[in-house]
Image 1: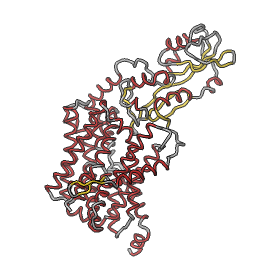
Image 2 (image 1 turned 45 degrees about the vertical axis):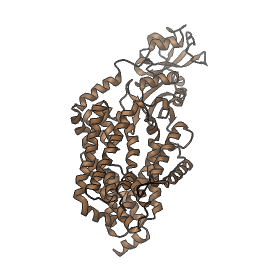
Image 3 (image 1 turned 90 degrees about the vertical axis):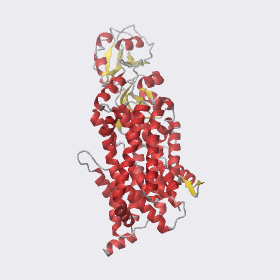
Image 4 (image 1 turned 180 degrees about the horizontal axis):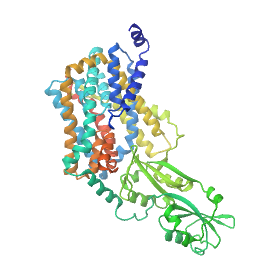
Length: 562
């Protein structure tokens, strides 16, 4: 045991990394498809390891780790957050605000009714509303109050205790509420409503330009006979299905395939498009030929493109096709991904900033279309470290600002400032794609390391006091946590469906987004036997991350009595 204490004193970072590793492994374990997530597991493991002795970590370490996490969250949510401030997505924004406001009111009622200290109230908000970042913003706000080291340490321990007791239960209740309880409150059959929504998305008819529809895509070569004398435009119109003449070779020389180009007998042409349409093109064009060299010289590609064009936000695919226009000629949309989940495609499917379009076509055509959509996601992209560091620094500086509310200095703290900076930097990146690169893989890594390290430091540094607080308030916190989790979602469901008239399937996805538990969407998709609940996640998730995170300093200001 003396050896363990020596290691704790000499190199506590070993246990911090160990807590991250063990907690992450445990968080990945699924029982009947369910897991409680890495964040809660890291905190639980850290609190347990914290019983071995007194861990001390420099405040700057926790500040940097938490800033990395919240800046990344803001960066990821920025484009969607600012784009959501429009009439088209107003209902989803209101739902996120209703859930956050209801949760705040309940936490404050419990805090005053049961004389909860500020740390416990903040931990209750963080856990029951399943927003881990509240721990950091509340801790930052407490640090601005000039408390003694012992009092501040106890308050931070109480935050950790309140979070540890209520988060797991809040997470589980959210996973169950979204697919099972919400449909009952709306008195609908989620599976049947999902089928109706899929039919609406299909529109009952093809889009006017059908510029982004996709079927199995390929290229084939033909020799012109039946099509001699006709223009490229006429041939493409007759074959349909957005098939295009990609290349024309006449007597060994390439001819530009403009729409008004007339085809001659004996020309070799390459058609690209949906397989069924190309195979059926023989009577219109002429005999198919074996022209490997002709086809090999046609570079094809499949590219993931991040949607960053603000004009496309909240537009249907049909509208996107009209906006992109001829730039999408020869390009097909194979998939649309939102927050890592594939969205069902149809003419009426909405596209949001931050979505990822998987485009198929020739390299040149894809490059032309990409310029109208956003920018291509390349594995070789590197994070702009200067942009990242400068953004966080500006956010931390902004977090130092405060103003008096009664006797309490109300401040966002470093975490809140970093969040706002992340939102602005993410928005700037969407406006100027040449600046501030941070690929999705890098975002995920920074978020996981930042949050995992911060949570582990909090659990280890306050393990002994947190365990005592859990023993003192455990059962009371469980009861309050259930109420703070379920009531906001219940109110949100009723407001969304009966007052805002949101589609019930979209409402289920929006509930998961507003609670920032995107895993709850999986359960809704399973029950609906459809991916349509994913349609409601993006905007409430972006707004919810911001609204719930800023609850930390608000709870501190409203409950601190000096």
